[in-house]
Structure formats: C-alpha cells, structure tokens
Image (cartoon, rainbow, N blue to C red; front, side, top):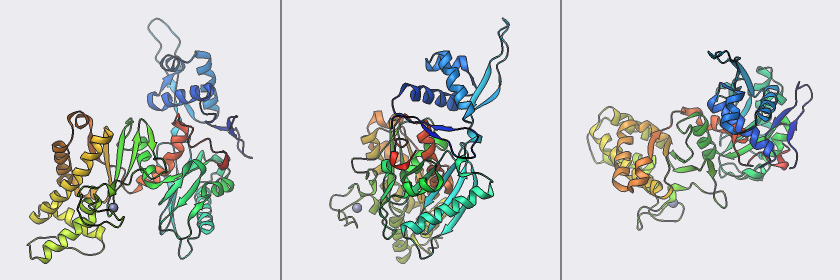
Length: 427
Ligand SMILES: [Zn+2]
C-alpha cells in the first residue's frame, strides 16, 4: 500500500487516518509522537520535539493532525517560568475519545464489546450460536451483535477506529483469515476479517486468543512497559504467547506457543499429541484433579469436595489449600513444582523479563505461586533468573476481550507493518 489509509466515511465530520505506509518518515514521526503522548503526556510540543528529535514545525503539524482526528487532547498549559516565558499547551493521547470494537469467538458463542482507548468496556454482550456455527452465520451474528451495541451507544460504525477479533484457533493474521478452529466445524480458511471489514467499513484485525491476551497484558495489565514477556494460559491444557523485543512471536507457521507439549519426562505417559511425557500431563489442572481424586479414593482425610468438571475440581483443591487443608496443600505444591519445571525451561530459553500466568491456576494463589517461584530459583541459570518476574494476571475474566481490542491499539502504536498493511482487509 503506497498511500496513507484514510477513512472518510459518509457522515463522519473529519477523515480519520490509520497509521500506514510502513517505514515512511511521515508514519514514523507520527508514531513516535503518538507513543510519547500516550506514555509521557501531558506534554508540550517543545518537549515532544526534544524527546523525539523531530523538528518543532513537524511536531506541530503532526499534533494538529492528531488533534483534528481526535487522537490528541489538550489538558492545560505549563506554568509560566519565572523568566516570564509564555505558558505552553499540554497534550496527551485522547484515549477516552477512542472507540474500538472487541469480539471474542468461543465454541459456544460470541462475546462483543465497545471499548475506549483505556481498555474500558463501555458496553458488552454475549450471543449464543445455538446450533448454527457455520462461518457465514457466525459472521452475521457478530455483525448484528456489534450493530446492537453501537446502536445502544448511539455510535456510527465509522466512529470505530477498528475491530479486533480473538479466535479460538489458528489464524493467518496478516491476511485476516481464520485458518482452522478445531472446535468450530467447517472453519477452515475463513476470511472473517474481510467479511467484517466489508460490513463495517473499518479495519478489522484478528488473531489467536492467546496472542491477544498477551497484548492485553502489554497495554492494560502486568506487562505494561515490558518488551520481553511470556503469557501462559493455564488450565486443562497449557499454551503461551511470547512478546519478544516488543513484538508477538508467531513462529514460521503460526504455531509458536504450544508449550504444553514440551517434553519433561522422556519416557513419561503418552499424550494426546502422540508424544510422551508432555509438560501439560503434569502441570495442567487435569493432573491436579486426577491426583486429588486418587488421594481421596485411597482414604486420605481432607476437606476437599470434588464435583463437576475438571475446572471446578481444580478450584476445589485450590480453595482447600488456601484454607489450609494438608492434602490440598501437598497436591498444590506438587502441581506447582511440575509447573515450575516448565517455567524454568522457558526462562532459560527465552530470558523474559516477565512470566504472566493467566487462567484457571490463578485460583491457586500464593501456595501455588510460591512453589513455582522456588522451583524456578532452583532450576534456572543465574542471569536470566535475576530478571525474570513471575506474576499472576490481574485482568480477570475479560482479559481475552480486552486483548481483542488491543489488536487495534497494537496497529496504532506498533512500528510493525502488521497488521495495518493488509489491502485485503481494505484499510
Ligand atoms: Zn503432548
């Protein structure tokens, strides 16, 4: 694409510009100033010029453009100096004026929200798929749900800076395509991004759900300001997203992050993937629930009351451990040691600054986390260990939805040409 992407929708007062032309000086100047407005604002034009090393006239031009497009706001003036200098206007990123659509597909239905640029969900709704999960019908469900939300907020679709979509499966994000969704029958090479872009006439960005959760951490969670982090989704299976040198690492064929299938026991039991001794056979909540079942069946005294699915059973064990139950503590500590072994491997290989744990094992609380940290201390090299911090996510149940809208933030604030230079998505 050789020209800036300008969306000039009917009824919209000013054309809105989405960053484009990867590598162009104009785009890089705009990006540098936008980043400073977000991270250092309120800030004056003079300070912006100093910090960015961009000439004052160019800074002024870029600020005027951002202001006209509702991406910069005025928040007062500097205090006049004792020497009598004129007060300067202060600007910052106008996050409260930004509107972004967020969509999260699941095997049961679609969760959607309209968000502002601070990651606040202004309005959220869920629509079940019922029996109909074919791609076109699901796209129609997403469209009508988003239109309902926009209607309730009295917003025109053109007011959206973009729409981000989290997918429970493999995506070809650069082309706006869902490559494969294992739990959605018939979902193979579905151009969902194109369909939604046609419906709303705004940029549509999609990515795998674990990738979007890493972006959520980067923009609104524990990963703020961190360029090297690993987000681990815990639960029945284990998966990860890697943000390395400030960018998501997807791998050569978009499958990076299948950490649950790292081998930690060469001759261990067989995993569904075909390998033996995979990490998730020992560190998933399934392992914890199975061990608890066996211990209780063998007659061990405990306050653990197992019922329901694996998730509920694991929650019961975590809760009993937090309440001081001896058996539960023993199980959670063993679970934490297994988990820590895999985390130690990741720390030695990737040297991340943060490891953020999301999902079901967050309920394990300090009894789980302390053992993970201790195991990592015992099994990692000194230099990577010194910088690696292991924490629980604090984004709660909306992490993936916030991650979906973060795709649009990433497009706005990232130097990468991904994902804004997608002609197929009609930016
Ligand atoms: Zn496996």
